[in-house]
Each structure stands twice: as structure tokens, then as C-alpha cells.
Amino acid sequence: MEENTVVINSYATGDVESDNKSTGGLVGEVNNGTITNAYAMGFVKADSQSGGLVGNGSYSTIENSFSTGDITVKSHTGGGLVGSLYGDSYIINSYAHGDITVDDGSFAGGLVAFMFEKSVVEKSYSTGSVIANGDEVGGFVGELDSGGENGEEIDVIDSYWDVEKTEQSNAIGSGSELASGPIEGLNTSDMQGSSAEDEMDVLDFIDTWASIEDPDDYLELQWKT
Image: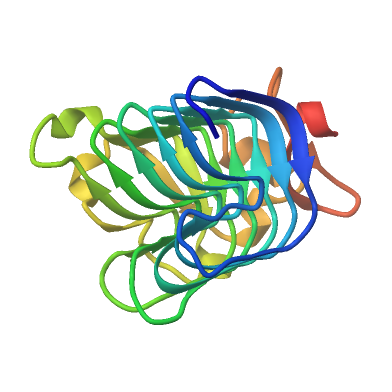
């Protein structure tokens, strides 16, 4: 995508396969852009730095968006929603359900694989299984890296991950000391149906999120229900 691009009320349902890096279910790369009310449902298979919605995001905002497809990355950096997040980037009110597999390397997260510099994620959740080698593997984020300075400006706040489905006991694989939190690990039943409003109470159930009942399922964004 070109700089300063806005993507709104958009979606993709097809599978994406590439031998390159920066591959996403909806967008490969976004720089100085905004993605709002968007989703991707297809399988993503690529070499590296790839995610269910966006492969590589820098100086950009992703809000009220989600991905549900599985992600398989050959060498490194696979995230349920975003592969790599750089600069003054921001994710809010978003989620990922896809299973993440990094075949030959590390950097894997249920929502984001790698966050660098001043990136911030808040009021989001992840549920897909996360399978990779190395220490940079987490149920929510694979690694936080402040770039050596301004560590207080990179953060993960008010978010959740499914401890059972992700098969990860830690929210963040590496760099967890940089996150102010809270980032809470919950069981599947706590994140579904009417239980979600009690257990995930930092989220806005008035204007943004909707619990799903009969049958019980994970939260959805109100604009999509």
C-alpha cells in the first residue's frame, strides 16, 4: 500500500500463498496508513513477516478489525493478525482466531509476532494455537523490542489470550517487562458466551464488542454482528 492510505469496511476471504515476506490476508504492507472495520478469513502461507490480516505494519493504525484464517510461515515472524509492527503503530479493538505455525524459526504470536519501537496494542484478544521454535513465542505477542531506547513507549494494554487454545502459558515470549498490561490469560469458556462480559471486563461492551450466545462463541465486533 502507498503511504497515507485508508482502508475501511473492507474484507478478503481467499487464501494467500507467497514465496516472499510481508504477506497478509488483506494487505501485505501498510505504511503511514489506517485500517478500520476490516477482516480477512483466508489461509496465509508465506516465507516470513506475515499475518492473518497484515504482513508488515509501520507508523499505522489498525482498529476494529480481525482475522480468522490460519498462518504458516517458513522461516520466521508469523502473527495471527499482524506479522511485524513498527514505529508509531497502534492496534485497538481487534482480534485473531487463526492457528500460527512457524516451521523453521521463531517470532510467533497469537495477535502480533514482533513489535518494535513505539508500537502499542490495546483492548484486543487472540485465540489460535501458536507453534514455533525459540523464546520469541507467545500467546499474544512473540516479542516486544523497544529498539534500545524509549522502552516506555512500546506497550500492550488491557488485552487477553486463550491459554487453552493458544497452548501458550505466556502472553509475550520475549520483552514482557516492557508491557504495562494487564494482559490476562483465560480459559476458552471464560472468553465465550455471557462469561466474556464478566471475565473480559476492560473491553467496551456498550459501543464496540458483543458477546455471542446460543451457541456460546468468542466475542465479535458490533459493526460485524
